[in-house]
Length: 497
Ligand code: NAD
Image 1 (spheres, rainbow, N blue to C red):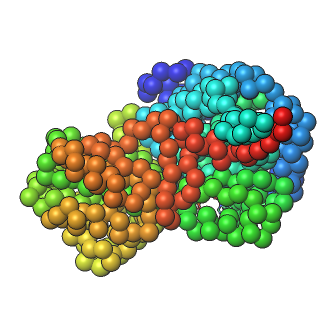
Image 2 (cartoon, protein in one colour; image 1 turned 120 degrees about the vertical axis):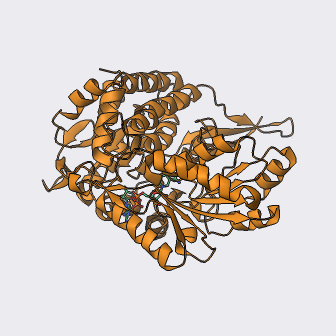
Image 3 (cartoon, rainbow, N blue to C red; image 1 turned 135 degrees about the horizontal axis):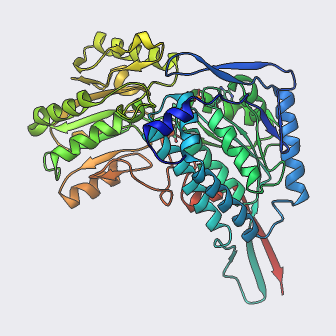
């Protein structure tokens, strides 16, 4: 059942979700305490299932299993080509079960099924394949020394990697970290978000089916403040890779300082600027992509272009086009193909969105469209795509991430002013510039403080290109061959010959 049609989706959504289990040392087990967390679906607020409410005992056990598997060489000691074989098989199994996995994930986090399919299993499989292929193609180095010395740089796995991920795209983001960590020969302990666990458990199960040895990929579910903290404070985790909020990112750095100084890699939030010059190549297409860049997955996208700046001569016309696209979106049950926007992931996200809109209006923003909760009777969490205009630098909606379907728009007059606006927050994750002037595009790309700049498009970058936030958007890179560096130690061997 792999085809994206309504009857297949309906059949898959009617399946009972199996009880969530931790995966430790290749076995499926409940939390040591036997406690469980109830999981509700954002589609209708109904109970979906349960996951282990794990604690530090489960984390200790998972880290021990990871350490044991690492030291045994059962994975770290394999020829890279053998690791590649298992990872490629894993990607194949994920693709073969993609629709089932996407429906499972959408029931858990509310992402519309088209995006859930493309952005989750399909994207994760592509990422796993990319790093699988890299295992036997990335070399060590020999440095240029005097002739009586051989100076080698080996790239060695770090050992045990902890991975903590959010709920918006658990498989895509999880694969960005787990795939390079495994490709480099490490063992992993993965903690999914308690708001989106089931699809991660399913693909971890497939990893074992693909031949990943027990203990190499362990999954411990539960609350961030318990399981995540235990992982962050653990004395035997060498590297911790995290995607999520800045608030938790700061805690992880503290945990590292209070424990073993493990390396912490953070992919955090953003407030990405989208800058439209009057000479953009095609204003209609720019408007369509502008709406998609903030409203896809309800704005619950780290790189969402939540701040729009438009050059004044085209501002009114352009805003009319964007408003048209926002109002044409069909928001509703994410598993119905007639909808192109699903539910917000949980009630907290809905509350955060309505509060952000309310505050913006109190601070002087103007409601151009949207602003209301939808489908209240369903029991789920739905909100209209919302555009606020006349925003100013000091407003919360300009400075703080909403992580909801809220666009803050205003006009600018000069290139210099556009640069100032682009760089006016503490973030630096992504950005976009629309212009037909090549020189202007390059000048802007050079001056915007962000890890990613799009020109005449938004998004669409693939796994070959890094996502590496600057300023308070994070450190290190997900995606691209550079991501491997996070999960490797460089060992210098200086040989007198
Ligand atoms: P979050 O920070 O609340 O949670 C992320 C993960 O951290 C979850 O697994 C959670 O259980 C865990 N956690 C919570 N408290 C913890 C603690 N004290 N110690 C250790 N772990 C803990 O974030 P979220 O609400 O799941 O996700 C939304 C945020 O993620 C947004 O800020 C968004 O911008 C960011 N995000 C960033 C990217 C990126 O690539 N830069 C991608 C997606 C999401």
